[in-house]
Length: 237
Image: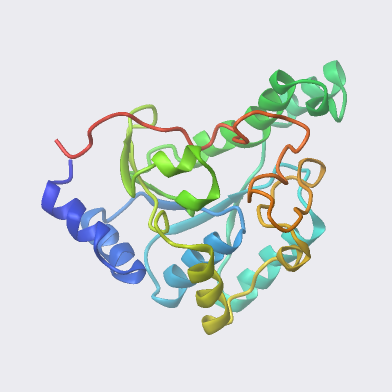
C-alpha cells in the first residue's frame, strides 16, 4: 500500500510528474482507460510524449460514433502507438438484443444499465484484470457525483488503486492543453458534444446546460454508466 507521503507527492505533482511517479512506484500493471474524450486525450498525450510504461486501452461498445473510431486512428498515427481495444462478449450482446431489442435502453433505466454493464463494465473488468493502478480522465466538474471522487482512491472491488490525475482540472485548463499541444480530439466537441459516449445515447447540449445533460438525456438518473463508483475506503491509512 502507498504511504501518506507517496500519495501526497503524487497529488501535488503536475500531470507528467505524477504519471512518472506512478510508474516508479508500480513497475507493472499500470493501465489507462481512455474513452477518447478531451480529458483522455490530454492524458494520452502526457503518457506517449514521455514514453511512459502505461498501457492505454479503450472500450468499443459497438455503438460508438464514426468520429470516435476515426479519432482512434488519428491518435495511433500521431503517437506511433496502438491503443488496445476491448469488445463486449458477443454472446451476451446477442442475448440482450434478441430478448429486449436493439434500442431497449430507451425503455427503462434498468435496461440502459444492463446495456452499459454488458457493453462497458464487463469489458472494463477484463481490461483491468491483474492491474495495479487504473488511471482515468474523470474531472470533478463533470457531474455532482464526481465532485466526491478523490484524486487517488482504493478500489476494493477490483483490488487496485484508481488514479484520477485531472480530477481538479477545469474545462478551460483541458482546452488550453489541447490547443497548446495540438492534441487530436473528437470534432464532435466543436458541435456541442461535451461528453461523448455511444451514438444513440449522446446528444449535443445547449449553452448553459449541464455538461452531462447530453448523456442519456431521456433519464433523470445520475447520468453514470457504472464504470466510476465512489469508494468509501480510507486508502490513506
